[in-house]
Amino acid sequence: MILDGKKMAETITGITKEEIEKNNYKITLALILVGENPASEIYVRNKNIACQKVGIEVKNYRLSEDTEESELLKIIDECNKDASINGILVQMPLPRHMDEEKVINTIDPNKDVDGLTVVNQGKLMGGLPTIPSATPKGVITLLKRNNIEIEGKHVVIVGRSILVGKPLALLFLQNNATVTICHSRTKNLKEMTKQADIMVAAIGKPKFFTADMIKEGAVVVDVGINRVDGHICGDVDFDEVSKIASFITPVPKGVGPMTIASLLENIVDCYKMQNK
Ligand SMILES: NC(=O)c1ccc[n+]([C@@H]2O[C@H](COP(=O)([O-])OP(=O)(O)OC[C@H]3O[C@@H](n4cnc5c(N)ncnc54)[C@H](OP(=O)(O)O)[C@@H]3O)[C@@H](O)[C@H]2O)c1
Image (cartoon, rainbow, N blue to C red):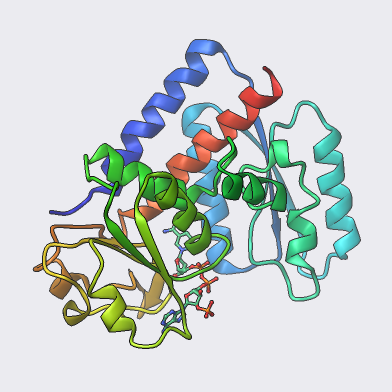
């Protein structure tokens, strides 16, 4: 069965919109884009559209590729201090001359809608209430809302980035799964993925995961977004793997829309934290 992330995201976005309207929340997101990376331009445009749909105002900052890091840090600092701004998102990747970690950790953790500051990552590690990054949150929501059991399942995540793999592993652990994390140095990857009740692909390699790497009846979550010959595909060979998986997310219309829906939830959560 196909896990329709687009439809689920529409449901969740509808709930978010209703909450904002019902409570008359006045929420503003600062959205900062440095440079002219075409993929980032698309992501920023989509985030603008999504915010507009639910009534979140966006203050866009467009900075040129050669902007000094100090200039970016100054803008973040101003947004941190500005009480009318409830969330700050710096679109990644940043130009090479900038230190991403330093930039991320300049964001006030209470306005960190991407959940990437060490403070919010640390809270996630400690099992404390926090803003988890949007993609892992979206994956868990998609599974839970489709009544897919997580507790006691063996989850194999391939990919260990701070954006996807690591926080997702922690969220699965919080939900009582048994978690294995694999990466580029994992030996016998196929032996690992074959054991998965729930297999998460997050490596950024088009159609890498073929049917022989997946257990019959497994749930397959494809986080990957790859552009091949003008088309978007995931890390999983969908045509083959969908024949043996019990559930599978498509690309597009799978995890991508869930990420945006979860980001909107995170922005509202930041607003609520600031206005307790
Ligand atoms: N759907 C969404 O909303 C969404 C959101 C974020 C990202 N994405 C997509 O998800 C993918 C992963 O993103 P990311 O930011 O996590 O990427 P990343 O930072 O590049 O991390 C990729 C991870 O995959 C591992 N890896 C790479 N090649 C491998 C191989 N052949 N075998 C096993 N592991 C391998 C790497 O291992 P090492 O650590 O050993 O290098 C690394 O941990 C990308 O396609 C990205 O576009 C989608």
